[in-house]
Amino acid sequence: MKKALFFSPYLNTPGGGEVYCLNAAACLQDLDYSIHLAWKDQPALTRTLKLLDISLKYQLDPIAFAHFTTRTNLLSRLAHQRSYDLIFFLSDGSLPFLFSRHNLLHFQVPFTHLKPNLISKLKLTTIDTIVCNSQFTKQIIDRQLAVDSSVIYPPINFRPPPSQGAKQNIILSVGRFTNALHNKRQDILVNTFRTMVDTGLLGWELVLIGSTLPGQPQTFITSLRKSSQGYPIKLITNAPASTISRYYGLAKIFWLATGYGTDEQTNPEAVEHFGIVTVEAMNAGAVPVVINKGGQKEIIRHGQNGFLFDGREDLISHTQKLIAHPQLLYTLAQQATSDSQLFDLDHFRRRISELIKPSS
Image (cartoon, one colour):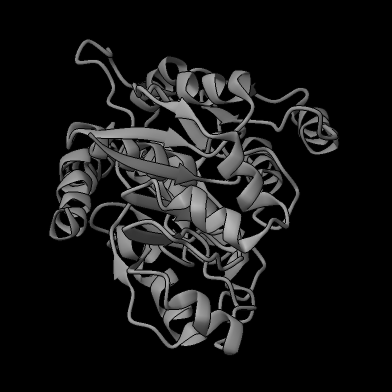
C-alpha cells in the first residue's frame, strides 16, 4: 500500500486549512493510500477530527512533525521522507524541502513575503505541484514565486439534515475567535447588529460560532461577550459539527467581515482567502451578506446569490432589504443553495484525484 504524509501547522485549531488538508487525506485514503499525519499531540488531533466530523484512519508521524517545525538535519529529513509516496504540505508561510515521490505544496494564504531567491528556487525544485485555495490566493503566490499554481477550491464539510425544520430569524457568522492577523472581525458584526437593534430591528438574533485556541488569552471573546450584553446575541465557542450544522440550517442570513478596514492589495493575508464558511451557509440556504474582499468575490454573485458589502452602511442596508422582502430572501436562498454545489466534496475529491493519479 502506498503511503501519504500530510502536514498542517494548525491541526490543533480546526479551520478552513484543516478542512482542506484532512479532506484531501480522506480522498487519498479512498485511493488506497495509508495516511500518516505529521503531528505529535493525539488529543488535539482527535478533537479537530471530531469538530470537523471527518472520518479518517491514520498513523501519527512525530518525526516528520519535528522535521517540519524545527531545524533538523537535511539528510535525516531526506531519509525519512523517502519512505513516502506522497507528501501534502500546508504552508504556514514557509517553503519546505520535500523528498517523497510526489510532493504537493498547498497555500491557503496569499503570503506576500515569499521571494524567488536562490534558496527558495532550490526548494521549489523539490515540489511537483503547487495548489491554491482560490484565484485570489493564486495571483499573489504566482507573482511572489514566479510559478503557475493550480486552484482547487475547498470542499463543503457540513450538510444540514433533511429534517432541519423551518428557518428562524437568525443571522449567523462562523469563524475563529481571535484578534490575530486573520481576524474575522466579529466585533464589527456585534456593533452593527447592536446599531440595527437600537434603530428598531425586532425579532432577530445574531449567533456567532467559532473555535478558540487552547491555552491562548481569551481577551477577544471576553470583549465580545461584554459588548453583546443586553442584546439578542449568542456566542458559541468550540461547538461540534452537529451544532454548527444545525445553526446553518436555522439561519436565514449569513454575515462575514474578515479583513474589514484592510486594503486587500497591500495586506492580502488579512482578508478571507476563500471563505468556506460562506459556501457552507449557502448550502444550507442562508443568504450571505459578506465583505467585498478576497475570495468572497469568487463565491458571491452580487444580488443573485447574496450580497457583497464594503462598509457597515452597506451591511445594514443589504440585510434590511432581505428582512423587509421575504420573497427576495427566498429567491436568493434557493440560488445560493444551487451555487454551493460547485464547491461540494465530489468536485474537490475529483480534482485532488486528477492531481494524484498521474503520479501513481
